[in-house]
Image (cartoon, rainbow, N blue to C red; front, side):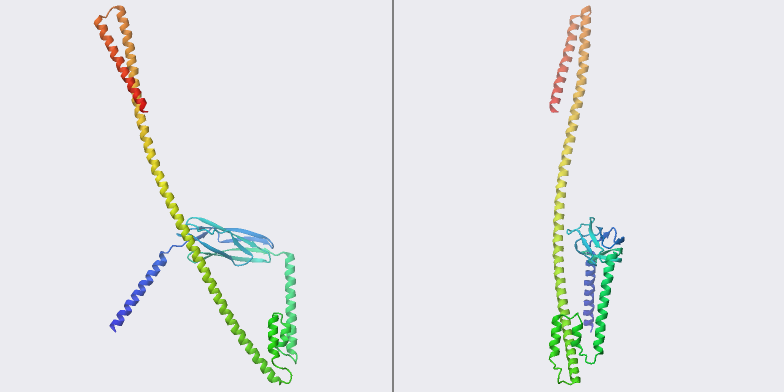
Length: 364
């Protein structure tokens, strides 16, 4: 008994753990979110025959690409179009048009448009309302048509009542001639089945019993046929839904691959941009260093030029002074030699500075 209890506890623990894991997976899954600028339009008052177009704008505010598989309206008078077949990335916007034809749609109208997409709910709803003023000509035609139909129905019912009140009422055989909804094949089948029982020489109660049995058999057969048809229809619908689901799955896979390609492309472009940025930074550093070097050389040249200007002024002063003093005879030959030697040294210094300036200029 204890072992059984332990086993049960272990199984319940495993089941709860798996359920928690599933819940966690579902909560971790990311979905796109369609945020509409306006989910309901009021088209106001329209006249019958007008064709109105409205644009529904939306934005993907979710965390995954939005894929719209189809958009369906609640009525054939409303035609949606122009939605993007490509995935709409998070943060991107989209739109689709809705055309509303007011022909044979009068008075208050409320139409809904269903968007089938890969959102959490699987579909989103938008709508619009309008008040359509009927066209007098069309209203007259509709009134005449209603009156004609009512008249035909009243005549049919009257004939049926008259038939039922007759003494020689033959039931199904007489109804065939009145009910217009039976097709030719059905009429012929019914006639063949009734002809099986000869009318002459058969007692009335036997004939009625036989006809009742036949009707019951026909009802049973029709019920079986109906069930079989329903089963076939359900089977076809299941197959169609399966095909649709397969198509949507394939479409989603294609969209996923496209998104992955775009991501890889964006990654490559980002890496390329990063490389170009680094190269540009290196170039900028190089140019900055070159500018600094040139500036320093220019500063040195300017300093040396200033020094040359000073030396030239000094030489000019000394030569002038020497000329004056020699003309007056104040200086001895030794003093003259000394002064000339000083001037010569200054000139040599000037030449050296000029050579240095030439070297610096060649570096520019």
